[in-house]
Amino acid sequence: MTSQPLRRRIAFFGSPAWAVPVLEALHRQHQVVLVVTQPDKPAGRGLKLTPCPVAAWAEERGLRVEKPARLRKNLEFLSLFRELAPEVAVTAAYGKILPAELLEVPKYGFLNLHPSDLPKYRGPAPVQWTLINGETETAVCIMQTDVGMDTGPVVARWRTPVGPDETALELSERLRDKGIELLLAALADLEHLQPTPQPPEGTHAPMLHKDDGKIVWERTAQEIYNRHRGVQPWPGSWFEYRGKRVKVVRMSSTVNLANTPPLAPGTVVRMAEALVVATGGGGLSLLEVQPEGKKPMLAADWARGARLQPGDRLF
Image 1: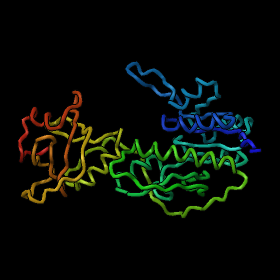
Image 2 (image 1 turned 90 degrees about the vertical axis):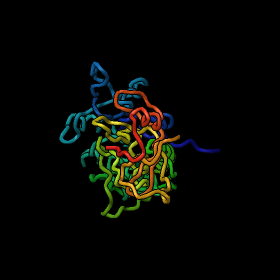
Image 3 (image 1 turned 120 degrees about the vertical axis):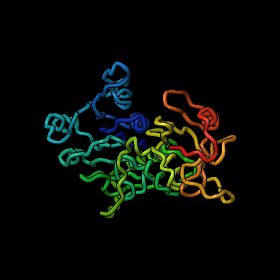
Image 4 (image 1 turned 90 degrees about the horizontal axis):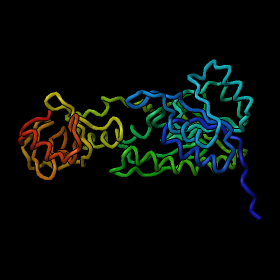
């Protein structure tokens, strides 16, 4: 007779839509006694205060939700956390550093689902920088949280090749889904986990900013394409032409320009099915763009409408 897995008393810390399937899996198999998210933020034209996706999902199902603006020196929240007495806490894209006094409350500490091959890409944007930097392999880790930024010991790891055309959205969801499997297995075996300490040195994956999506034509075509994959869906790839921003919705990787005379980066090579632009190394095919204030369109159609000619530069 197969024994039923233990139902743990769990507190969950997470905020964006990416974290909702993690909470959903925990809710199915365990007792989620508390959900902690970022505070409500203004959204929409009316700037109405709106809960983050994790809070909205949890509130719809009657789970207890707390949205503290800060955790450090928050005695009221610390008291509540101790009162609820979770056996273990789980974090997935929560977005705040957890203070030591909070980490000490659950008997089995905090487990974090982190989509990178730690100690590579500690920080808030690991998948994005994995792609931007052209990594061909990555991992998802289940880590015991400590007071550092993603520096705690690892209790489970799954490595995988990175698809050559995989975007940040696609890769992050694939890593998350495998991470859920690892997390559930770790929760079933909390008493016997064997954490492996991380080396102190690692790489940082800072939060993306709008300018991280700007196309720098002096980079190679492959570097621009890798960055394009990494900045999906936000901030997206873009360049400016005649003072207006043009978003690149779709592009393809390197075009061989071996039989083309040397051209300055950003120069239009040809306009047929795609708009081919010279870069600091090879050519890049722009397939679909969205000019400022307009709907997406084929890049070649936009180029013809803008009266571009081969030899013109996209500046």
